[in-house]
Length: 191
Image (cartoon, rainbow, N blue to C red):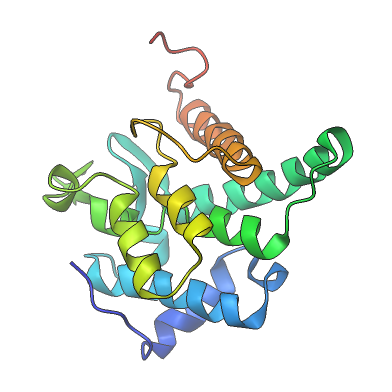
């Protein structure tokens, strides 16, 4: 599936230069976050970060999505602090926001010009592979549980302020991607 990659200097540099919010977490977490992204990238079929798709059937870049989710989540955390009197530690929240889709480089491939689920995505649900990787890298239980269960397709989600913020930031960015591509956003789709 993947091999922990701490040596890909050019990939590490690209991740550090491309992912928004790394400067908001402690140096130790920053290194682990970068290692997580480098690991899934190295195991993926993608040459560049910008080549990674966000989801099946939608040609929108994963990195744009992750950066949008992180920015929106940081903004929502400010609202949570002001309105709910709930302070969310940047090390916890920003780590969750940046890593929520860390397994997607392994979950989607391009075939005949279309973004489709990989073989792995038909064996293990999105979020679970990310959770496995984060466990190996020594992330906290709250980070692992939130990343693992955040997908709307999961049967349950972590009940926490950080999980709530991630959900809304994720859907906000998803709807932006759909609308930017002339597709129906999630808030309009019938269930």
